[in-house]
Image (cartoon, rainbow, N blue to C red):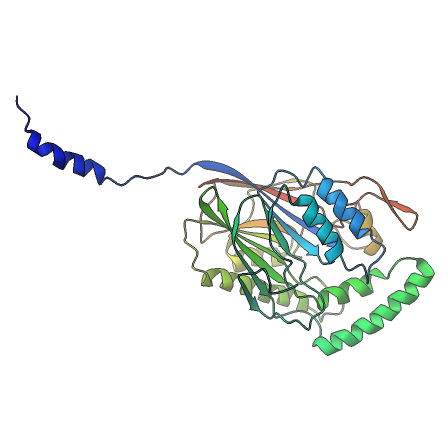
Length: 351
């Protein structure tokens, strides 16, 4: 049987026009969130911030992640030590949320250069960051800036007196006022993971504060998280791209507020929770115990994935019970990297 060669060009053309598809491959991502407790050395000079930053940079738990979200990276000196120490592992880094508009592709929300303290959130990545954006929350406990300044002055004098007699700073007074006039918000990065976009939002929301009115801290957190959800929606991120939210949410996993958070953010939590039972525990953590010896233990640090975007195959979250090499503060030995324990999330996803 003869086959007409006149049809061969048409056949070849038809083959050439068949679209090619690259099959998604299953990858494993490691995301770490870590509240550092690197507060201002001016206000809190006795917590070994520089020493702890170097210990964190040299630690085993900080290695081999794809993305890290840090909170409470407030003081520029220890945070600079941490940045330099992690530069080779995580060369792509954001500025600190609220510290400046420089280095960000955009700044949204309630940024003000008059507020004296940044928001403390930093994202570091093993993979190239192609977008960096920051958003500053509007709602926070307390009166306006001038009232906060007045309260801070009173508090600062109280801690000076306390330090004279006890060699350490009054923790409750300082911490609550300190967090009330910081520019808390979230960082957003778009990451190029081997040619695929991954989107990460890192945040640190309103802490419980004895100076807040009843229910106000929870209301402010709800407002802050609603702001983050609205911002994510405004970006029109393609639905087939992975969106991750991580940080210190200051919301206990065993509370009704946590269930509301999952709904408000429209996120998936980890399928399994492993490791230590808490992420902040004054019973086992020396720093947390010194500051809040009688407070209940809490699980308040999380990694979530967005339900509106790329679904993951599995996600396991582990609270890492890690202790640092010994360091000395005011003749007292400590063995803590921070007052929080870091949280690692292992995500299996087809990209």
